[in-house]
Image (cartoon, rainbow, N blue to C red; front, side, top):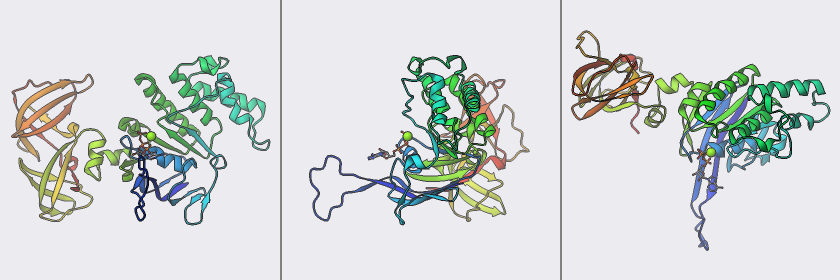
Length: 378
Ligand SMILES: Nc1ncnc2c1ncn2[C@@H]1O[C@H](COP(=O)(O)OP(=O)(O)OP(=O)(O)O)[C@@H](O)[C@H]1O
Ligand SMILES: [Mg+2]
């Protein structure tokens, strides 16, 4: 298990400054402003967040390529870093496998050799036999779909193939912890999707423990056992993909993970996990609320487009039924989106493509109470 505690990394914001006046230490800019998380054995744990939120800095700190300003990192009982005790184990002694945003393959070696080399240079006691090395390399080449290129010089590969090779090279040693920083970002959309599943399958089959960094929410949802959503150097929420999606803890998480309908509301009554609210456009009832607010609180309501149940007729016997007018509709292939106007509010609905209601039509829609999520106002 990897444990990261109170990790901070700051940089001196003195760029471009000629001199520092005494007493002016300059502003500290926190790339990572105090993060805590654990990665369990056999788990693929994802750091997800927008560009510049501190994902790479966090990963490089675990790797030992960055010296954190504060905090502690331990892996399987070994202390990799401890600011207070002044421990900072060298990167090459941490026993990690890494694939970074800017990957590098060994240009003077063949594809096969690129993958076998990390095994060949292991100390004699840890080095597998020649046959096993061959088997493991072939297995990895199979997974990264480079089997047919085994004897080709690594430089004569496309960018995407080189990235897969970088991945294969890190996988082959089966490290205690894999660090993957946007390893699929150079691949075209179709291959990226295949690779997600392949990578996930391999991670599961080999029982690899991995930290995966991405800014792509669908990649994170598909691949991860758990996700930490980061924003401005901090973790906003840690949870399973389904939890993060259905129970976002903050507005940032709800907005970053997919699309959502938001509206402000005032709490009218609380009955166990059932909360009734008033919005500017009508009342709503939310079921299965985990952290009940107090009556009178202002909260943010989040409703996913696929939870908006659109119907040409009023049903009358369902909770949270509102009426409006279709403003636009967009066919997206596997789904169709309708934007419904309710006064000045626009509600997005996502349905299967059999439903198609022309703009201008009066419609009714409802939302099951357990699909009405309350997020704290920040
Ligand atoms: N060496 C450095 N000196 C000063 N600031 C830095 C340095 N490295 C990173 N930063 C800043 O720290 C913040 C976090 O950077 P980081 O590379 O961790 O982001 P990221 O989440 O990996 O983003 P991306 O998705 O674009 O890769 C950014 O604001 C960045 O500008
Ligand atoms: Mg990065």
